[in-house]
Length: 145
Image (cartoon, rainbow, N blue to C red; front, side, top):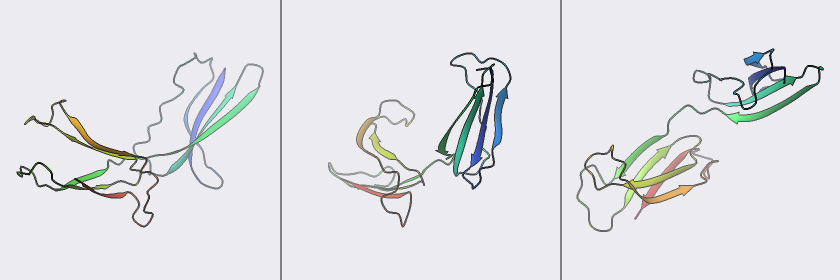
């Protein structure tokens, strides 16, 4: 490849592409073609387009669709409360809120320091996105015994 352009556009009709990176020199194989600094862009769906041309003028274009999501999920353990004493079997209640929540897991540790890597998994749920309840997208109420 001798020339390329990497561009992005929000999903609009027609798309309005903006440049991420371009070069008019031969590109090494497996080299990144650009760094998309998207942290200040609105969270929505985008098209990413690559246009390439070789020395003979042959051109090819490919594009993908992706969803930009820079927002961390909101997580709140509702029960039991912090430092509560519980019986052998108890209910854990939590509220998770994120538009694109795909999975969650419950972990526990016997250590007093929450930064330890000595965590064990209690439960994991995956495949939550797209939301099952379209009336409240991204909000998951959890009750685990």
